[in-house]
Amino acid sequence: MNEVVKYLQECGTFYLATVEGDQPHVRPFGAVCEFEGKLYIVTNNKKEVYNQMKANGKVEMCGMNKGTWIRVKGVVKEDTRREARVAMMEENKKSLQSMYTVDDNLMTVFAFESGSATVYSFTEEPKVINL
Image (cartoon, rainbow, N blue to C red):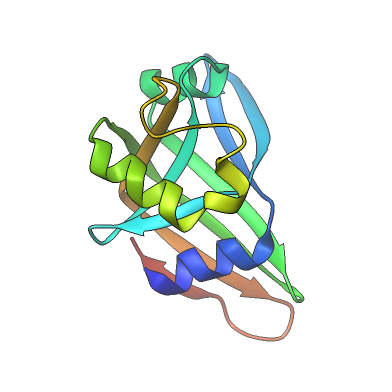
């Protein structure tokens, strides 16, 4: 898991895809963390992405770094525990503290309950990491 989190952090910006009905939606994300052995992402519970993930937890993320790229696919579930939000904030304080506080009733985290990450390159075989 550390490898996936580190890769996404090194990307800086990565892209999260959700679906609403039959329409895909993609947007930039930039904060991840590992908590209790799971990959976590963060969003604002007033955004459409929040509603889309609540309605259909199947998501995909993609990012590129140093000539390789990662695709993370799986099922996410909201984690309402304060401890999970604290872990996210501690890991991403620089980027999140201007947008959220742990108890602002906006900051929401989702954990990957299942899935896989694949790192690709033009010169090597893909590397699969189970989440």
